[in-house]
Length: 388
Image 1: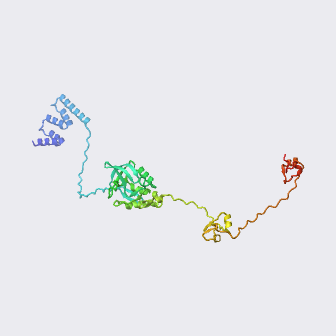
Image 2: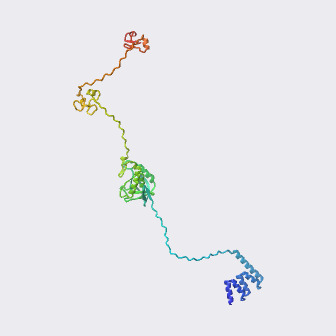
């Protein structure tokens, strides 16, 4: 029995040794040996089946065909199996956990407005829609669902719509600039300490994107800095921007003494009238009269004291008026020198034989005394010769 036990044990766990022991010991019948050999190793089983006479030929053939078909089917459907790689366990050293610091996020700095060397960081603002531009520094907006008139803080542009002032120089240019930049735009309103002025207008710094529009007006020379405490948040920055515009003589600063700390000087903006050139004064000629007769002949009497030609010797009574009616001359007025007369030309003797000759010479008619007159030509003796 012990050999049978070991035979069955080897057949289960190591069948070639089991088959050997089974055929060596006679505890199994030959038929059992064949069947067991067919089960565990069918080529050996087939061999012993054909050798053993207990199996008929039909059984031998049938069993052989059966195992051949099974073998063919097994070969046809057999697929190579993947070999599982041997995984070697590697003992990892347990290292102390190190804390990995998360990368620090870069702080996003708020946008800053850069102009004329000045940097102003944009704060949180109220969003508003521009409805109308009234003038350079005043706009009408819709904010929080209602309409508001906004007066820009710390800037003052020349007037264009003041009820008691005329349109000031650079006022239309400032108004046009604000219209072009803000009309229909969405802006941000930044308030200061005092929210409204005496007229109920909202006081604000106006941001257009990242641009502080109040500063842009100063930079272009369209506005001056106007300080009304307590709204003075950007007064130092605005004065720096204003100095830059003044140095460049931009806009209102192109007119000397026009923009002042108290407003705009309209007189300085008026064009200066150039004085018309005065005619060159000729030195006064000295006039003197020898006596009042001479003054009267010149048509200047009477002569008051201070007038040209006045002299004390002409003012006999000393009343400041010379050559009055009671002033008389003791010295006769000098007679004008006689003009030289041209020397008389000697008369030429002209003789006409008859009137025909006189007429041919163009001298007829001839009067008595005319050159060429002769009594023989004056037939009727009336003193006119060759009258016909």
